[in-house]
Length: 391
Image 1 (spheres, rainbow, N blue to C red):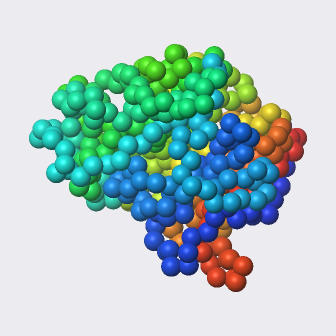
Image 2: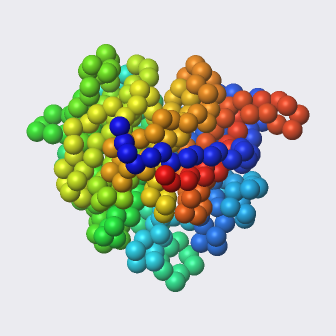
């Protein structure tokens, strides 16, 4: 038990960002929102409008803009590089996901391995060192400080045993920072967390680990900082040894100076626990992973200036949770945002969080059954404020 007291969470009313047409029911479109603040101060939400498939990587997204901190939204055209991550030197950096290419359009050697994932899909694996650099997915757009035009670049990333993959009949530019989470560390360096398999001691890993990369030169070069190996709790998850591994990491620099990482295990075998691990030494080492909650796909975390840290996650359902503990060891019970029903029936459970002020965050998420003006249910991207009063 904690003596810290409980922060109080108040959820604002949902605000519609954009709604799909009534006939859009399939998995993938109007899901997976990302929110950012543009250089001109407006808010921008990007969301997926294609199938949830590697064949859709690099295809256009949906976009919406707000000029009043999320109170109203209007649809927008492709925003290009848009806001990006503001670096310590004033540059802005945005990961770029290249378009997947049909397998028969790409000259590849024979794969070195084939893995069947828990979903039943087969992934064909190639040694990155056997392929040209053009087959790398480490691409960025950069807006240099004081400039008005974004430039394209390929980062230098040093990962021992790096691989490339073919899945669903396409060559995927993966690994990619587009599917990692980038954050500015307290020392101004950039960190990224990826879920990844590699070649280790001549063998392709069977389950994915969490790999942390760090750049100390504003994103031009990246090196491995540390790794969280897949170490599940078999008592909490009977399917643990059959899982795809740890995936979809989210990390946060906590007020006490530690780093908290949350990791998904939900896969084709069904709902799996959300795990947490902590680093007390700037990401060099990590604690034994433990269960954070019984469910959770790609979570989001945010520490407000009032010292309260939020975590948003779910599947089934969608929740937000708070802690006033600077270490993140003690969390309050979760608050329901979308009620849990059968998986995939009412929300993708992906989200994003952005601070609006010291006590308020804006939460972006999906609701598959939100009514339009005529009362017809539609797949919808929503935002709502999360106001937090510390204890």
